[in-house]
Length: 243
Ligand SMILES: Cc1cc2nc3c(=O)[nH]c(=O)nc-3n(C[C@H](O)[C@H](O)[C@H](O)COP(=O)(O)O)c2cc1C
Image (cartoon, rainbow, N blue to C red; front, side, top):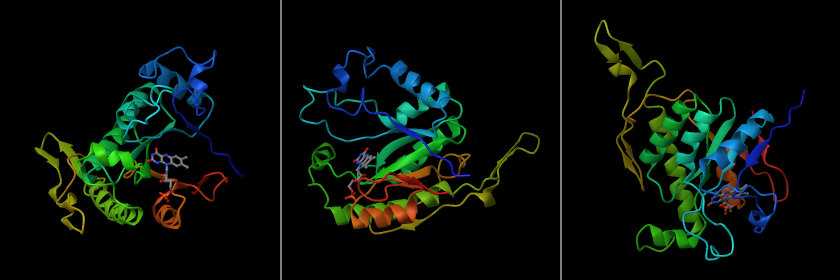
């Protein structure tokens, strides 16, 4: 039997730029966790597979006319994980402006907190103004961002696999907490990243997050085809979930 998968893309008080002014829009501030908890719980009751949070790393220049602010998505997921039980939780995070070690820890942590429900929307951050918030180097071009992202994926995969599923013994009697032979450093030496590993926490219930990617360029689509479970097929066509 074919199944329809539903994802709720929560974006301000709606995607329309004037949605926040609608008389029936929520009166809660967009920084109020209750707003997101209410939506997440309703989506869960409505049998949605997941909720999704986008992220951009610079404030838009029309922030006076429309609410262009939002809570940082990975942190937000930690709160939503405690307020829901079944729904998938997807947060966007950038491969261009994050270190893979930080990202791997954060998503593994949310995977533990949510008991195996985290997803990562992989973005390379097309917004040029984001560069101004991360030093004085100009924004990387498209090809450089995707080259970095490709290497990033190898590093985070290595980190998420650096603790075998049976590494933790937690054996009080013998005094052995973890099996050293089931932990492995990744010793990654690439063009962009040098990462020793292993990760600082045991493998999450899913091992790795569910990967989401919405690239629309040829490079982006090839990247999505290699890595993502939830991806864009073609402009104007729906995203497709692959089993
Ligand atoms: C549904 C959807 C959500 C997206 N969310 C984000 C986001 O949160 N942050 C971001 O920087 N880009 C986001 N993007 C942009 C894509 O990641 C991608 O960069 C864009 O589609 C251009 O494709 P390209 O990267 O292959 O050039 C989103 C795109 C779509 C269709």
